[in-house]
Picture 1 (cartoon, rainbow, N blue to C red):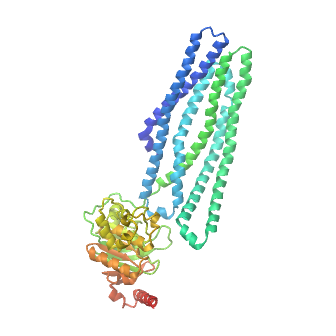
Picture 2 (picture 1 turned 45 degrees about the horizontal axis):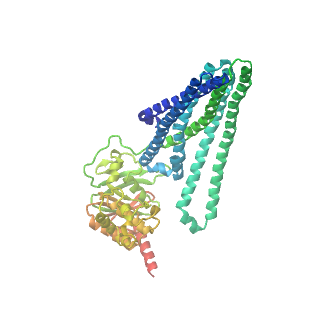
Picture 3 (picture 1 turned 180 degrees about the vertical axis):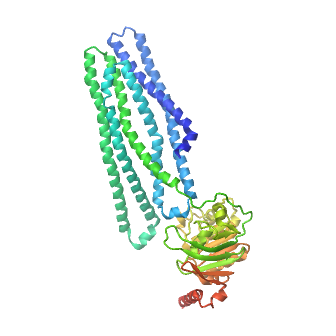
Length: 576
């Protein structure tokens, strides 16, 4: 990722480095000029014109520093911000391509931590750290050369004697900082995940009266985060003062030996002032070296966490996709067996299944029998072996996932609405759809009258995840959103569980009557809603145990008949 970014943005860093080097060179002029002024004044200042010239030189250097510092910040810090944008964009685009198997094992809080803390840590390494590295190495090099050239080489070697110790200390503590920062980021991900879950589930928490329990859980996560941070702080607390001590040791040596040289007349007072000024310039890069190690190690740890996501394999891809000119919605499963990546036994086993164009097929069965799995496989949310699932006669593995999903209106069990208007949630994916079309499909989904009763009608904001709506309203809006795609195949995965049987039956009848050219797959636990289906598949423990039309199945003496009779009895008891 960094290599790709630098391929297009290396000029920014180059120009920034040039201006930064100019800053360092200009900084060398002022101590030398001040030393000359001191010696000139101490000697009686017989050439006032020369002194004035030196003063104007200092003013010119100050102006030059203003310009060059401005430009290096614009180039390097601007590039770092651009890298931050590029990283978040790349990460988000990658997340949109990853299959559900990734999200099955990855927490939302962990991803949020990578989007925030980790991206910021890498940005610091790509901005301030680069500045410090260039500044530290170049400024140290040219300053040491200037110290020896303009004053005394022996005094220079004595004063920089602590430098090798700085490198040893930085290497030792750098490894410790890297290890502890990885632990801090992992703990932060855990804490973020707990907060996200608690906020999303606050109504459930309140309904169960477990606020104290959740507070305790959050406190434990917070304590762990503080503990990991304190472990990092303890290392940093030893590292930074040690760096400062070694840096100041050079000043002590310069004072002892430099003062003696002035007294003995080996160097002038002006040269000594110049030398101490240069030595003072060395203290910052020496101290910054510790900051650089810290920032780089944090950036390394965070970059590794980001690359874990970016290097994640997308197991639902097609190398040479086959294109279907006109999608008909003909689905065939042949002896299909499927096991979830985390499962120990097949969720579906030896499934033979067919949906002819324009037909209405129902899938019913016991809880956990694999009904929803069939819907997910048709939408290609999970990979299947070759030769088991075909769409319009083409193996699903030879079709582009995006092309499949554009032609399949899939409504899952878990409804999700964005914090937008009702109308925009329905036309989601194509904001150019007219209000008339939105109302048309809202009517088919039996939600139009409800929406008209809202305070602002179709312009009503539904809140985060549709919090202001009932479960049934959210489900019907989700159906309208899927239908407005006008896809050839509609898959309704038990997405009407929150509405009554009559409403569900009315929606399905309206859908069939108005869209007779679509293939429709209805997954429902209410058998009364699917009695008019062209064919009904009955699943039990991942296998098709019965298939046929309602009139035959209800008298077949099998699972379907038992389920239907039980539901009719329950309905009768509720009426009484």
